[in-house]
Length: 407
Image 1: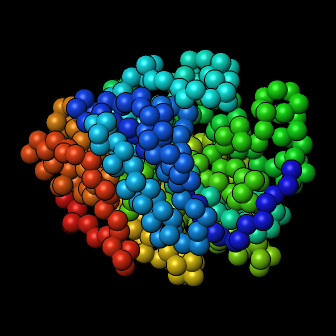
Image 2: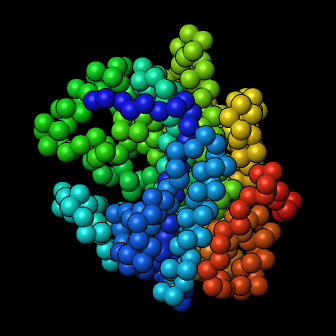
């Protein structure tokens, strides 16, 4: 299983968007029509569900370049979806859509998945953010993958945007994680010691008919041999460009930091598998209030404290990678709360999950998370989304200050 050449710490972002009916705010099953009207576009793809389109950046050196690709692709979608009375938004789940009435894209690989997984596969009404980071040496891939598992739960907490399922408040910050792991080959990855062991694992999976090729391994973090990257798939879909850039920058910096440690001859820490699974559950359940296991010795710490320290420790790496402003934008989430908290606040204030959907539409326009006071004002004033509008790009210096947090 060859591993393609990729320049070190180059970056690619995939962002899944919901197709939302302007009138009902429910999902629309119109991805096939949208993609037909768009035509061939390397940055706009279909996905498993017909309520979804995916925006994909090119392989870039910086987070800013990736975000520009994503924003331009979004702009190209607007004149296509507007006549259909469809708007674009995103989050890990939709606040009230019925999973059992969603339609699957007519493609053999998706039909095969649904046939095998039945009810679970048919209701994968979930949306994610995937970040690829280039690895220049195949021997680094598996050690970095294991090291990332000490921090993927933190990424999951920051991006958690799926508190609802079929209109019900689940009590989870990230219900998407709970749903997605029902699929075979999804969930936390196996931590393997060598590339040859990975090849053997994949060969056995193919031989026994579990998968047909490596892309059907849907781990939270996985190698991407075809692209020469590590792909982090543990994050819910971001609701706006600032948070999308923040998650991408934090992921890129973590990978580069671990790569530098390997260059210095250091051994990277790795969590026992049960620690990884426990962290995944804690982050899904408690989100920004989770106390996570941070190292192999079992040290525990509130997720926000760890993130604050990571932002300081990774700042020199971010400067070298040209993503210091995007890394700093993670503080926007710390200030405003994660998306699941903002959605719950909107729904509670209005006594309706429709308010959470309106919030998602407003945030993609604003290009940033809305602060608690802004969420309350938005709902109290009964603002309804107007026609679709381009997402507001981060300013040239890449900073996006928030209003003071409502305490």
